[in-house]
Image 1 (cartoon, rainbow, N blue to C red):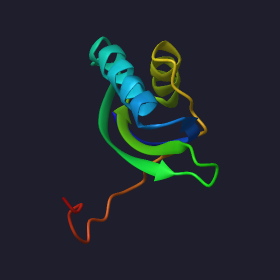
Image 2 (tube, rainbow, N blue to C red):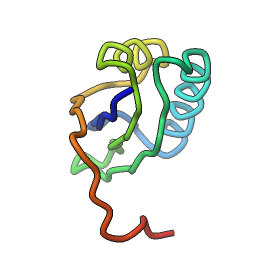
Image 3 (spheres, helix red, strand yellow):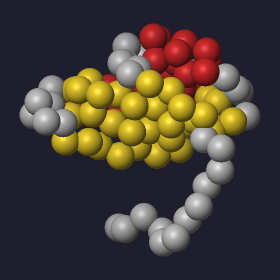
Image 4 (cartoon, rainbow, N blue to C red):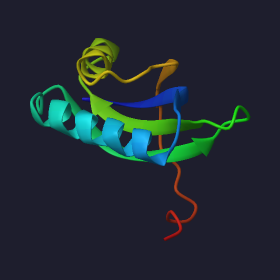
Length: 93
């Protein structure tokens, strides 16, 4: 399994739309546990007024991420393999 960052730019009109997408993502991901695991997401305030996300996933491949996104009806703007992790401070609560 490898770590990937997934950008979903301008993917969600508002908070409720994003919550619905997160629920679909969880349901689909639970059905493919050997291929993909959602670690965390950061919600982005886009200049258009919509919401985007920057998500961290553990997955067997970029293709597994694309299959998951298609099955959950999620946008994918960009997938970037994560080479390493540097933690200076834990995420704020």
